[in-house]
Image 1: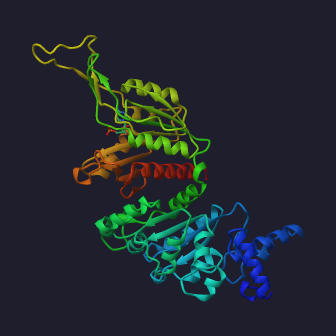
Image 2: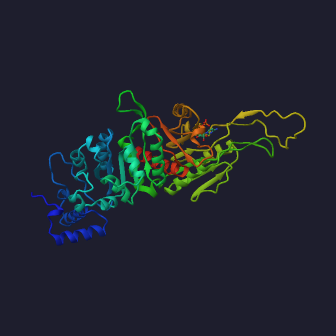
Image 3: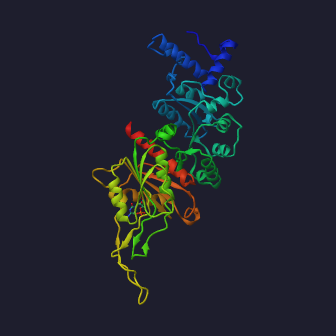
Length: 467
Ligand code: C5P
């Protein structure tokens, strides 16, 4: 059968098609697919082969475009991890997404537009000044005519150019022009990742609302190099992408339990043993989970923060009260233990105020229950996903791994609180997500952003567990 392209239509038809596509916020090609699908359905055709692209050898058949189809624009940057992006296309398609791809000039040193186009089921775009693609789709429409933009691999150079608003090629022009969420999967050498300039650029991007997945720790392509910088696995990126697209409803129908703030252990009626936790991170997580549609129970020690909207808050003072409130709030799908629980309490609380005269009192301490460990080790009624926190000053990842095993939880969110990070008392947080399989390092971001990223990660994990 002869092939028909939009370019071959007569001008009047093309104008009509352009208007109709614009009205539906679709590309002209997508509009044609929708029209053909409707026509096929009306004529009762079982097979929708008509709407697939020309069947050249090796080409994947594009999925039928429906109102439910999620459209993802995948920008492939120029790093060795670009080979994994071929697999990512498949993983996204398996999850019902229609994938359109852009390759940077550097990406074409690693993968070809032909292989990318073959997997995506439509041509891959490479050039900002290509009159054909500008006419058919156009970079502005490409930027808007999608539900999400994913950049994988996001190289140090691409991250730097996007952070500074460059629009010198198709990838950066689209990223500057898009009004849709953007998810980036950084991939680079550990030294490039740790470089101050890269971290500055990432902080700028996350402040601008860009979401980040990975990078993970592990072996690099270069012999003998290991550390943080490996691109997240295609499955992780696909899950994060779908969780973002689902957005507000990502945790709908899920019950999430969060502990927050310090505990306060009475010495006598006026004195307490406590710690300095502000509760900002735990409260932000409860708020983000509620905003994602979860039913949230927040068990909080004494803090100077209002209860976040839409959560059921239980206010407690001591670790034992916190454990009792947590057990009462079960069952839950997910439990996040962000509280800074006092490790010890006075063995005996004096019923009257201890007087100052004479020798200072000796206060005998006993250990408090470990709430995280108690819940994570439950034989029955254990939440499907149990997340703990760990504040560390050195050997952050190694200590977090040890804690993961000891506490029996699924993830530890470790934050580096060494003085040079400036995290203590600050509003920003640098998190390493340590799981049994991977260590994922997030760029420095505000506690609200950490909370939103954690919600996306949780939603993605629950989704993956279903598959
Ligand atoms: O042992 P460490 O205090 O470093 O562990 C931190 C993690 O354990 C946090 O998630 C904290 O909420 C939780 N934890 C707990 N009960 C305790 C001590 C810590 O739930 N008694």
